[in-house]
Amino acid sequence: MSHTDPVADMLTRIRNALTVRHDWVVAPHSRTKEALIKILMEQGFLDNYHVTKDTTHKMLRIQLKYQDDKQPAIRGLRRVSKPGLRIYVGKKDVPRFYGGRGLSIVSTSQGMMIGKEAWRKGIGGELLCYIW
Image (cartoon, rainbow, N blue to C red; front, top):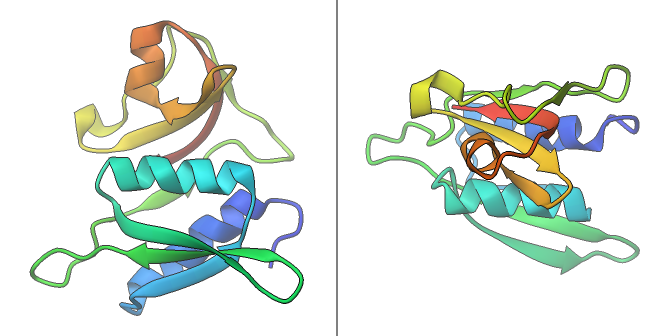
């Protein structure tokens, strides 16, 4: 488990669970990770999530989404900005990933949002990850 980069840890848990076709994956809760999960749900990459209270910590229980032919809705995940090397993009440089087939997720001063929305609003921020 990565204590230095909890978002990368959650993305890796999702990637590994999709590889072995699990229905659910569990990750420690944080507001950043919950905001990221909400965006993935809105964009159709995940089915649902619940916040559960373990004995001492809150946990995110994330329901993964598959297509009719049992292919994962998420084809790939890539963490961009890391604790050792933060990647920030200006309002004109926000990527619209894979020509609209994928997402870039940006953490801005107005909250976390997809790259296309940040570009439309004309705000930049930290480029967290790519999802396709």
